[in-house]
Image (cartoon, rainbow, N blue to C red; front, top):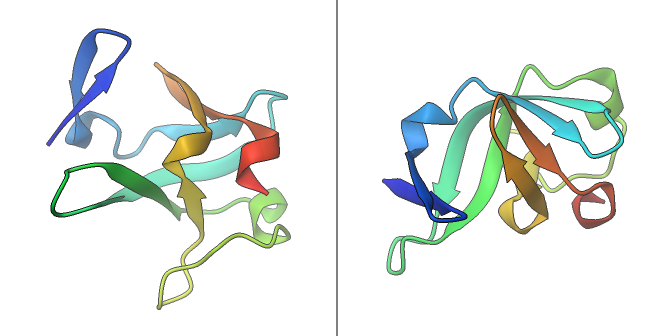
Length: 90
């Protein structure tokens, strides 16, 4: 799967393992997996692995096995980190 990021395309496997942080610098955990809409290929959620105590106390949507989900609509930047908007996560 290829993800477009401001004219630059990235393979979804390049995101796995990246640290997810907020714009204010709070760490949420790491990208464990991705949830896509199968018909359109749209990226819907990031499934967190190794969630931090900060993300554990938030009322995040969760997978059926309890893993925290971050909505992809909250992503503001991709690079060494996946940066998300605090306001859009909670």
